[in-house]
Image (tube, rainbow, N blue to C red; front, side, top):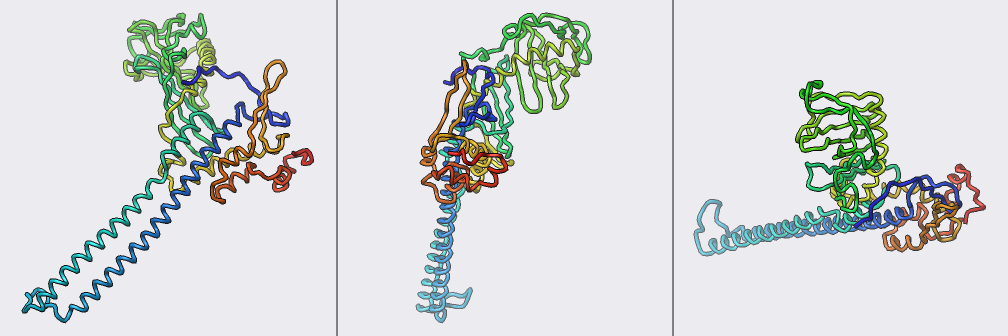
Length: 430
């Protein structure tokens, strides 16, 4: 079981030469994961190519065998022709009867043999349809549940209210090359989010004008608003994503009113509330809130959002993965996905390579407290061993991004124009 995640404070990572690294994460782990998943994808691609080649060869062999059978059938018919009775007539003698029997038996045997050959060819062709092995899917699942690619957009929905048996999360991710993945996961009991959270546990004394039963309230009917302290209100659902932030609050008691709060909708940042029915349906029309209540809601959301995002580490099952709308498991060429993944991290890998000061290593540093730094590194040889057994055209892709065993000076010279435009001191590269 994963440890309880904590909201991340700002962590400064640096290249090996101490210049700032653009991501706030241990990219060395990401690089190791990318290498594993791309090797698995390239192996799947090589196996699929091999199966298609064998199926193609088998198909050609089958066609040749069928042609031979058809030729043999014609030869037999040619030999027997003078002795066969006229069509739709009975044999007139023993010789014609024997010829007719031989022709009938031969024709039936040829048809059966042709049927078996075509069935074998079809079986081989169907065998190529399993292009994405389970081992590659498991490797992809491990990577996507533990790491993230640069410029990935995340959305997370947590539910812990009365309409679910236990608290769960639903997570979706979308990369800049349109790889989309969906996950789910359970919240362990060690987390305060394994059940509905009381507002007062996050921020005490918060007051809002909330709907209560009684009187008339807008189009919903049977409600009125009342300024009240909401410490005992429960957070039963929360969502954050690129397009919106949503919060569901439930008043205490079995008959407590449940309210959905949209804090952000695209560029619209004025909160809106909706009364929710027993099944979570919206009752009546949404309504706005006062500026003071909007400020209070945003203060509450500022406490919730970092903890909500930290729950993403509990994603455990990869439910689906698509790239540009096509299921990953249906890709004819799994290598196409691997190339996209490598391309998304290649610029950062090259930067790490060229800014690392220890020969043969890829180095990052992480600032700690008290003026100390921690060094994170992986030997390039360790990565090279992972992909060294691949065919050349796959291996070249890893080496082009800086994971080869060539000297850094040689690697730098191959990228001279890029490095000069980026302002590198080539004499300082090791």
